[in-house]
Length: 307
Length: 270
Image (cartoon, each protein chain N blue to C red):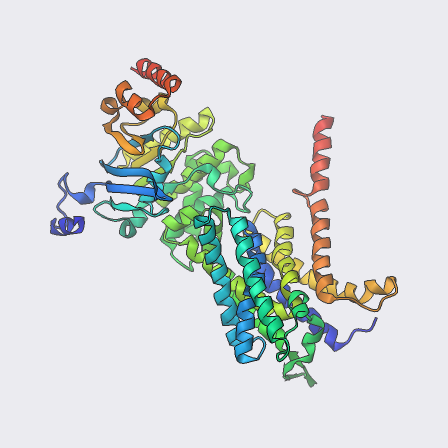
């Protein structure tokens, strides 16, 4: 295995995407809205496609705007349909995001002849290609760094999400734990809900190009779910989720380079491997976590039985 | 209209009829789901410093009444007046204890964290939980006998302890009128006594407490004011004059076993 500068950038892009997602993912998991992340990550597609058709540039501001609008619409439509359509929230989410995703797909396929947006990329992303799109060449310590656009965009979104979680930590905590009390105190849990949904939409778009609309769900949910198994403190859960997010990015790219060699292939999809690494970390923690782990629970039960 | 009245009253004027001294007035309140009314045309006025039970059969709209007062569900019509003002203006004087099942007890917070949430309204946006609010929260936990459990994750508390955690949170809210949704549901005897003590203490400090209550047997013992509800207000007033067999029959309709039980309890309690 040879490690190029490019590999470092791939890991950086992956780690930033995973961090940005994991930060918000904590609150999706705690609000029992994990599927909302799924829904939004798919539903932003028409917003993206339309913005892309208008501006013909990826990751433009218009694209973020389009995605944010459609993301919030997804949340709004979901609430409406479950209220007026006599279906539960899960079903109404299923209606909304599949319809929107399909519209997005149609738009992309229609436009595929004259624009460079590939349905495959939309699903899986192309993190391996992100280092090629260099937009900034700062010089530090006599070395020129070739900073890819994806890294810059994702760094921006990560900073935004860190700011959001830190500034609204108390509000996120109360509105996730006890939305009714929060609302009676003037901390509108609906407002927090839509703020969160907007950021999920924006983050999804930023992470889109690198990891696609399916892997991004793994990044939103898995690190947070893993962290929840290890701690009873919210701030620690947020910190741990970021640690797991970064670990999955690093381990994911390493295994994408190494593991296929064992069975005679050269390398494999990095974003896919990052999601797999997330899943493996989750499984390990699920088994070995000190309090909520399966093994320890089993052990305590046998101990209790022995007495 | 009520605003006009309260503006006319000169500041400092504290006659009993002063709307600013009436914790809760409800006028023509109707709430409907899917165009089907859940509560209908509610008119209520609760005097200051009362412990009020809201009693009625399942589906009578007890929780709905509370939530409509707190703007948690949309009202079809009517108005809710808190100390002569709109709820929006007097938000900080209103405390709320939701049903215990309404939250996820696996949430990664300690009992102390939950109690400290009661101080969030005073803190305002962007402010962190201060040392002072932590100390206040600790005091409240002591008052409900949970000081030793402050740092436990909340799923490791018993049902009664969870309920007391909620009450401690209500204490640090330091409101003047409280709405409590079934605080006595499925709690142990020790917790029930602790809650009653707490309610009496709140009353001594001039607070008004509205409690959705299920156990008819204890109504005359715990509450000095009672609202009998079944979609409409069947009767409301001092418990000794309102809590009669006749009124209960009108509230609970044909549910005879329950009625007989209630009647027996009334006889016993007198």
